[in-house]
Length: 406
Ligand code: GAF
Image (cartoon, rainbow, N blue to C red; front, side, top):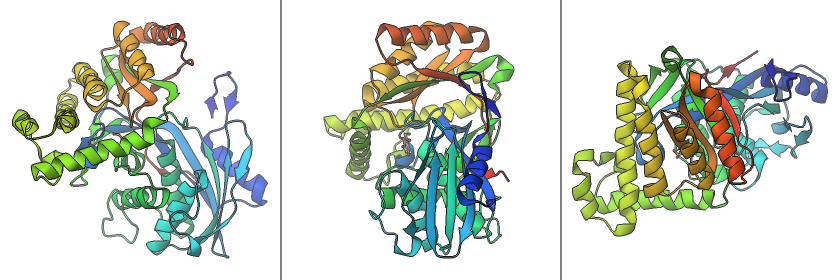
């Protein structure tokens, strides 16, 4: 149960998915699986450069109640915030191919497509309910895809327990993250990296996940900022600029071109102490991209070092430098994100930055709990002064990754 904005008690996403499934199908589901949205503490646009990221899972989850079908079809229904359901036309899993299903059902069809090719071709009825704010840069689409992957594996009799395959028949969470990425890149057609799926599948409660995209190694690092009187405020700016999708691809291609010109496999292979020399060898338009990626990887490593050595109160400056780098070098911020960051910093936050892909979505701020109300008020009034839509604010607590709930 949780309390909604109007003070009413609301069932959790898993309970809503089970109830919705029963009402729609007139029988109980086999089970319900859920996966969280994420905040990336630091390490932005480093994932597709083979670099480092540091996300944690949100308490907000997407749940998928599921039962097998004998006819090889997939049916999908989602429950909206207004408690209305939307049902897509059923798909034949055997006939799925990139481009064959578009819009929101494409995210689910893509997962079924990739699992079919991995030897899990079974049909299923899926019913989805979610608490993850959509369009907020908090990875609601990956929460959906990860929960659906677990549900489809679950109806095939496979439960995802370990981080890696670990000698069992079940795939590891690392492998499923790659499958979800493939479904998004090749079926949905979005050229995204591996940050969001990995966060949703591999994060654990109380920790940030230090993930090295090149090696696939993920380490849990205690994120005990509450012990130091701090918290992470999430500021959903509710802005979404249409540039987001095309500009993501432009940045990614620019990074790949820069790495090729330098003769390196990826920008991960550029060290901080050779940055100036390397920039001299690149055309003007690629230099800021490279500067962001190389310095951002270094900021992730320094943040992890501080967290490991009890220095969480000192990570604020790294968060703020990360924002400056994305605003001025990577050029993926926008007025709403800058307003959120500036207002938070001016009213007592120790650090703040946009999180996720950019051009809208959410910012995060590291806030002393004693300043919570002041910072929230300052951000809300700065948005009102600029006549922006009022932001949604909440404190994020590092929560569990994807799992079977029932
Ligand atoms: C989006 C993408 F999906 C991720 O892969 C990552 O590149 C992120 O933007 C930026 O760090 O969330």
